[in-house]
Image (tube, rainbow, N blue to C red):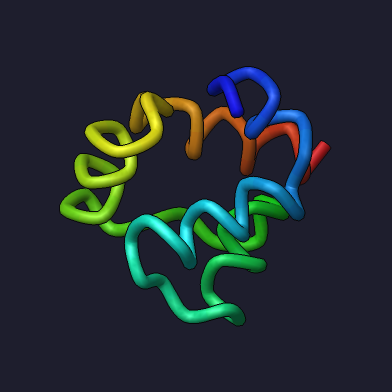
Length: 66
């Protein structure tokens, strides 16, 4: 699945976070829905594995707040 598809589909993103990075199901769900942001170290691992740049998490969370 491409990066843009993952960004648009929280369930698919959560699945990839669990499968590729070993993130717990609860944490993956919170990250993918913009409830939480990853730590800096996790954001770098996500970028390496899935191609999602760290700044997207911050921007995604801001969108959810509006």
